[in-house]
Amino acid sequence: MNALVTGATGFIGSHLAAELLKQGHNVRCLVRKTSGLRWLEGLNVGLCQGDCEDRQSLSAAVRGVDWIFHLAGLTKARSEDDFFRVNAQGTENLIQAADEEAGKTGLMRFVYLSSLSAAGPSMNGNPVTEEKEPHPVSEYGKSKLMGEKAVLEYAARLPVVIIRPPAVYGPRDRDFYQLFRYLKKGVYPYLGESRFSLIYVDDLVSGIIAAAVSPEAPGKVFFLSDGRVYTNKEIAFAISEVFSPGRQQQRPVRIPVPKFMMPVIAGVSRLDKKGSGIINRDKIRELKYSNWTCDSRRAGREIGFMPKITLKEGIKWTADWYRIHQWL
Image 1 (cartoon, rainbow, N blue to C red):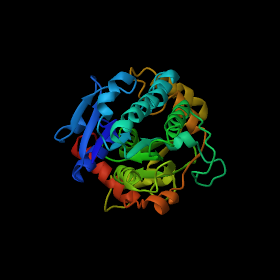
Image 2: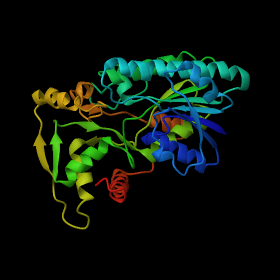
Image 3: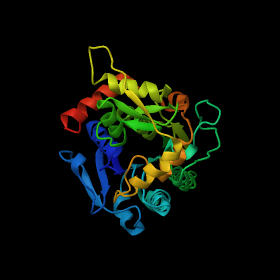
Image 4: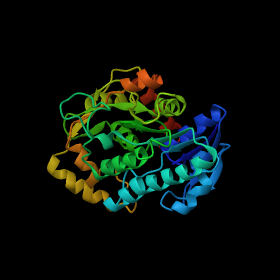
């Protein structure tokens, strides 16, 4: 198959591109002039210069491909307008280009990587299902939901699929990396008891590809997770354990972060020129809620999604990668 991957220079996209190549597919990557190609080095991919914000630049990118995997987007931004310009309008631009090209050559699948943030947190403590009416609580989540709606408008003409992962971790990820850094020092910031669904990047990639090949997938939305729910305490202790293997686990020191301090932390984050701090004003909107969990059983029933990586394995492999690449 010929596949187009947007966001291939990023954390998840680079893993997807590598796996598609491993399975024998041809991979074309949409890259901007300013894109860093570090994670694509050594991969036999084709590069197509363009930008989802520039509708005219997308025609060549979508030409002649069987699959489109749209992973490009912003998870952090300095302004709310940036979220909607990239995550919503950029997605609409790409699906429009795909629709125009599909009339000439046909398109077998358009997979849009959304987020649990588009659905919003659980309000009753039960993992969120696909049947639940979305209620995003952050501007990021709202922009991803708008991207979903743009894609679904073409569901009658194109075989579209939407994937909503929860928090994703694994090699190359920079968000969980910050937590690893704190826990290596024996401390972790505590914002109150919370519950999360997680997925290791390799399992997510497997689920994305399953959505591309399954005849049951078109027109549907799927949550993908490892099938478990974790407290923030469980996650912190799992990470801490990799720094003291074979010995009695040293519990990290919990440093409570009062809620009234969150805006101050976000304000400091805004000093980052790229607005890339893990705690920012928009993220705080999500941190007010304590249950970010989802139910991925539908994906198991309908597209054969079977996560394989346990939290213990995924955390160890992630930590090993950080060490090898001298991030820790």
